[in-house]
Length: 259
Image (cartoon, rainbow, N blue to C red; front, side, top):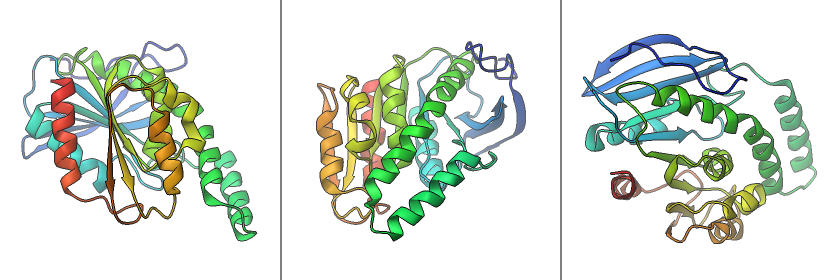
């Protein structure tokens, strides 16, 4: 087994990564790494050898690569399905430095909201800006991780809700290696055009009483998906209160489509 992550193929990223701390617990091996300025973490079954499916996970706004909402499903994908899972901090989140442009936009948005502007278009504007940076970053991370002997070139899935959906839709649309995606808590204003280019199976989560993404926007994004197989999972409650049993469905969804 190779002891390090290998280089990304994109010329805009460095030829090697730097490894950080590693540990194992409960059958899960956790390896921190950086690819250029992108910090990430890779989870694999303890003692894993040979290729396996891989799930890339996108965290929510204001969170990071090891937020509880990422860590819980990641561990289940590893322990129950034998998958590899990778997550990285998106710009201006987690272990990444602040971005002046994003701070300026956030300040402007706060002023616009105070003046009565709607929240959803402002979120969409921010997500579209960040996605232009994260899509090539995530593709480079996939290149590097899939060159590991204990990950390999198996099928790839994507999981991301909220900001992870806003950034995930353009990523899934652009990345042919992704065979199935779990998305949700996002709206059509940010990425309807990219959603139309997605044709892989999608499980889509929507909170009926979402205070951040208007219900009509979430439904419009689901409708915009070009997938022949797409399932809408609707639950009552606000943005962050997804029922725990939805994770059971997510595990079954990836097992069905990634093996």
